[in-house]
Image 1 (tube, rainbow, N blue to C red):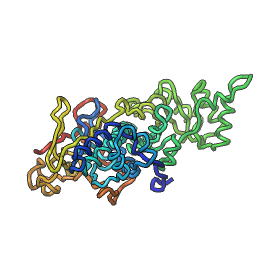
Image 2: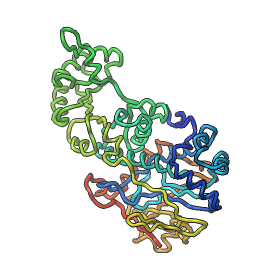
Image 3: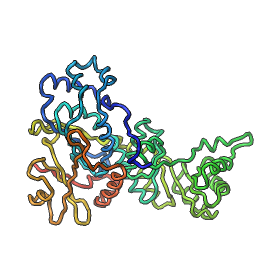
Length: 452
């Protein structure tokens, strides 16, 4: 299925995918007369998850789809009648976001302090979006970031997302989408295939092999014959239910040397892959690929880089963000009626004023730094930044990072899909300094410089 023709994600309203305090703040603001003050909110991460050198923006497309369905009908207003007054309920009933949103493209890199999303409008219409914005961006960015690390570790080898059974049923669909953006090639989740047009993958589990057991004992060959009869010789046979060496022998005996692939799901995957490759080649199945799975993460994938592995199946680690299940993004009010506002809280400060950001890039494509500056501070374009000396060093190109996403409540033209986001991830990773791609602890790969 082409992603552009995939069905919409939201069949109903997204308005109650929020926290109570968003609406109680709205009620107080309406009562106090401050609800219609013009405001700017920004999304950023104060820091990257421990051990990470970069982040990948994920979920922007899902967020824009969810925003289009953020409507309060009778079903959404009914549970609020005991909490909100008539005035607030009436305001919600007529709510349509009419503001502007700029943001980093989906698939773009981000670093600590990057103004990933800028939401501008009245306080009332911006504040009610906080939870929706953060729940989508935090989840999808965490998964996309983990997926990008795994994709880099895998190199040109195939990556299959197969974590649906390790997370919430709807989170599984979102995770499959974010993983595809981050560089995975396929998913086992059929709803993600239907909804987002991602390539699907999957053949059989150990249960199918065990099914072919009679009073005379296990019959692995019968299982393989049934699978090949149904799916063809290009299928992938799971060979480690009993004895891997015997499993490989039976697989080739049943399917022939044209067998598509074998999968190993247990044991020392590197050692097993070497043994299986030698055995397959000895049997004449030189074109049969080897797929490995079983609690893999980016470190496990990297450790198998020198082994004869053709594809990886990744589940639990991926859908839980490989140890960082949230990106740690926050949604903060930074401007009221043109006046900068900021938190002073210990360990949780914010920088006041609506911002823009550019990235300084060498002619070779290597990223030097990210520069964040106040919107309207005289740096309205990259050339202005260069002329003002805001970017250090000669010969650097400045790329504007925030793009129009919503204008006057309507989607801005030029919105890209998940294939474009996926391509952007691959392009951006080639621009990181080499040390930023290492799977080791360290500082962010690119520094963020804030102009006053």
